[in-house]
Image (cartoon, rainbow, N blue to C red; front, top):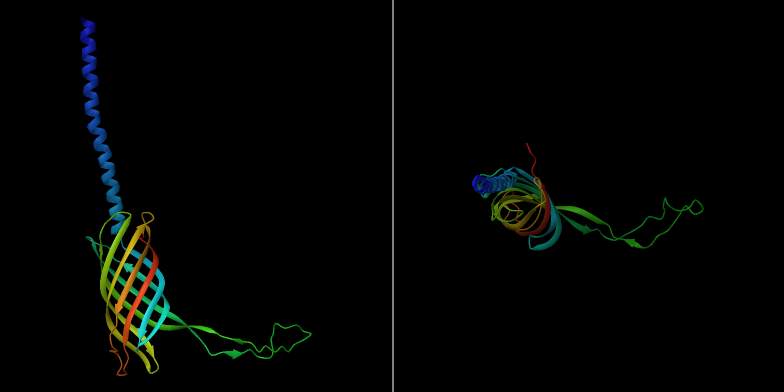
Length: 225
């Protein structure tokens, strides 16, 4: 009889311990998941800096050109899904100069023939300043996971070069893109941008910026301050 009571007591004790330990394990796993989610959110909420480059098409005074852009962004800390970003960049484009004939003397020629005549024309390519801009955007992120699509709208102060000097205007802008997290501090992203053109507001010379469209790729990092 005593052995039977002992076996029953042992079975009841084992069952009670299992039932008590199961909620403890589940609570621990839930706490770890919440902590991981909080760490992910806190990483996304930090201030972020980015550099981008891409291809740009623009139209100034009804002349369409293409170039490359170099852009620096500073995304400020956020309190919600909306973030404020500061943006500055330039656009450069290639122009080929008129064909020129190389000089008769070539320093690379052999000392047996110090004079070398090259009559083949060589076009030269120059990087020229197309336009520069600085402005601010309001961004909205649709999610907080590793893949974060977003849209943005803002305003830019844009300047471009004319034969009489520099022109400038305020232009509205819009962006859409997707950001992919590569860790707690680094991300890569791709986006499309559009700036609606405006007439020159800086100098009395007539000039107008019709549009600026850009497809850009970049990397960003969030320093742990």
